[in-house]
Length: 113
Length: 314
Image (cartoon, rainbow over all chains, first blue to last red):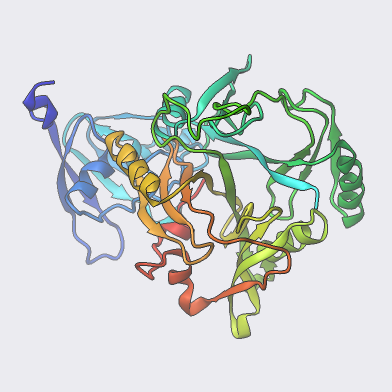
């Protein structure tokens, strides 16, 4: 393994913007995410708390978001928390989203899930 | 008492290859079987029956069922009668319904979890054998867990609407399955509501635990480790493997166990539970934790309840 790949250098990174519908005073928050990592790994590694963080395995559902714009790949996520219809509409669990371009997501509050 | 121990737990996983890698290379279990529909069966090195975890491919995480082993085949007849007399529907399934397992009882707990009781499972032996054994085998992977120790099940709890499945399932486990209450958390006016219970059918602080939450589910399945150094090494193994740790090594006030909470790749919480805690006995006085000290009960050092404890589960 080269030093660069060990450090994750040379792996493309994409800016992530997080919109939080409420409380309304909470503005957008930004961080960069390597495209081989899911959004929560990148967010938590800089101490961010913009998206609720849970199991990081697509099982618990607390990190549900709606992707507003951007390209991404998905890892398997629990149908208990994201239905096929919702997935078509861009809903996803943030811990299952690997960015492939600059991406904007909106946090889905628990009460709306 | 004739329920001896937790025999196995069947959990659902979203990606079988990742799951097997986790349970084998991180936890240190051994794969022993894969059935025609893709369920994978695993055991720990210090267990002597064929398996203690079944992984089932699914589009959801969580638990399919939990199974306890009773001492004698005739115990199944008496438990069948007692469960039915309690008013819970119970079905006897023939040998082989659960692979490598004899006839079994299947029923649903008041907490909505499916449970089996069985008396026989194929014997394969521990990794060190029974004649002049070494204390541990060579070639252990990952955390090298000894055995599946207990599970914590989340139960519907909403006292304002008169719902407390923790109390209901605790009563059932005590009155029908002969478990005894070891520790509890009580909340509300004068501690009127059991929010959580830890119950034993052996001499360890818990063979099963129940905690109240919005919906029924699996909080975690736990593995036994000897001591604190094993827990520290297990945490190193997790970080090396980029496993999502929920709570780093810490002591539980309740049960006195040395713990790590972490997640399998599908988000099912696992625990390494170190130490024997104390000698649990049916006549040992029940330990009670109050609402205002709940944080210390769960996480003794920080004395703070992390939000994920009651909100993140499968």
